[in-house]
Image (cartoon, rainbow, N blue to C red; front, side, top):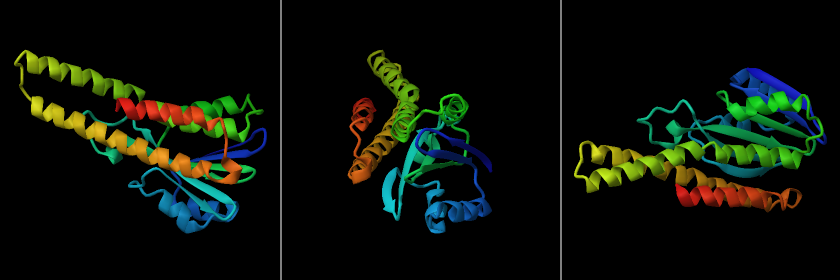
Length: 211
């Protein structure tokens, strides 16, 4: 496991990449989080969600996987999980693979220690949504290409290509829908009702419209 710890303005951030079963046991004791919650959060099939544990808010979002193959079309193939465990003075993030914006944030935090927990969470969730930007633009571009091929009667492989685009768009819509539900649930918690998250909702709505 690769671990990063940084004390920021009003909380400590701990980021763990590729934790093992033994690592999860240690994190359970350190953060007083049920081991079953940590273990289940690493299930690759998980959808975006939010749930409330004693003294902890647990949230999962999915980030576009830049290593996805052109033939990939399912949610699990196209995205990877980013897991949050949010406590009063600590935030734990877990993920199995490298996530670019997380790596950049770790470097920035060394020099930006005045970052507060609200803006930190807003940044990470917004970046998770924005990670789909290029993939959605690619879908739009390929859809236009298929339409042009239909009009030009150049229909070689058009059914296969159209099916792949449909699968990808469906996977993205599913991710965005469950992310919206998770955000709504999180913001229902009296300690997590933040006006700042309206920007995140607006961003999510825009991506949902274009996917």
